[in-house]
Length: 47
Image (cartoon, rainbow, N blue to C red):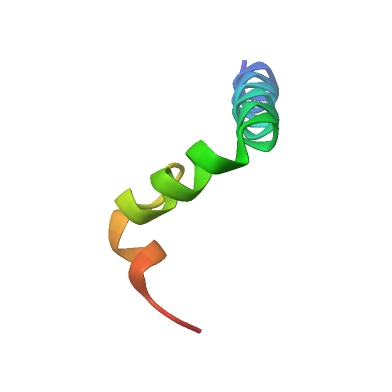
């Protein structure tokens, strides 16, 4: 069951990233909002 959930999560993330790649102008606006897959504060930190 765990492998099924891992594959499903990966498949879903890959589909979302593919959509973002198709529409880069919308992706730039979303990056201002926060990190989609993790901690919202993590995207605001600079490395």
